[in-house]
Image (tube, rainbow, N blue to C red; front, side):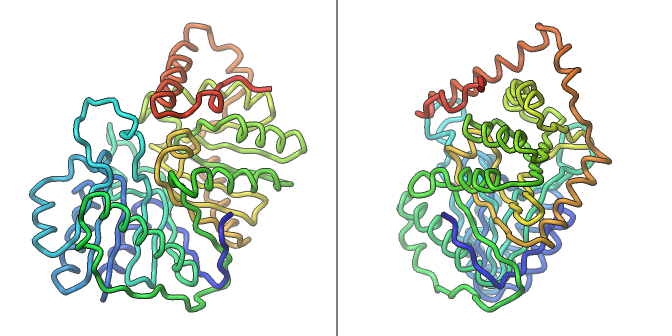
Length: 391
């Protein structure tokens, strides 16, 4: 069960254009420490200024800890790694790749969190990697994503989470000397009037924490559920909770990726369209650009922004982090932006169209779905939870 803290100020940041200037401003003001976790770190128009800001901070005496995923950031340049280490940055890779081609269970268990904590006084949590929104195939418009800037008592949870993750990786990679750094208590002063919690998913005590947080909100919904998620392949319990909500009169809207970025999950998701539409759930596809968002709003009072997709890889294997906010103003702001995206950049999927899809066009989605289930089997998870059949 997540722990909620009162007295926070949570600021919604949309896309890299809203996120990176604020992040860089806070890094430039850092006096004691910067801790950054990210799945992808590209040295492009957005990533290069972040790398330079980290080096600059380290050179002026700030303790900088950078934790990258060993798969998502596997191509991070060796010369930049050396520059960072020379500047005094402590750089680690979570589960570094030993072989590009080895199909191993551990390969699917990634660090997918995107968290930055500066001086233990401000934090950023969300779905935005260190990569430029325009670093996409075919030069489409900027990638669509969200993050939040956090101030207030919730920093205790966020600060503890990043320190614990760093501690685990240091011990796993025999970097115990890197644990000996000055410790600064998280800022706990009242910064606003929002109630919020940090929900993390790991492979120990919080294996289903993010999924349970979603399920509780869905089961309590009375008016409306709006979910925007880039990779959406929920298990049976999640699907049945959404179907039950729709049957009791709740409007359920799901905004999904309309462009093909990762073929396997993109087409596997389409095996669920018929059952969702049959149960009265609205499906929309965001088509203006690539969508990377992982957010939701329930009844205009509960909202979440984070790194977790609603698919088996995020909900069962990856290290993830979401901020949950119980505040009508924040929820209204996020909902307004989502509704605008539906109206201006998305297309609604109609049941009549799905029913008319010929059998030969259904092959790729079902093959993709079978491959996802096989990957789950390789990872050591039962396949029953992610079967496509419903009630």
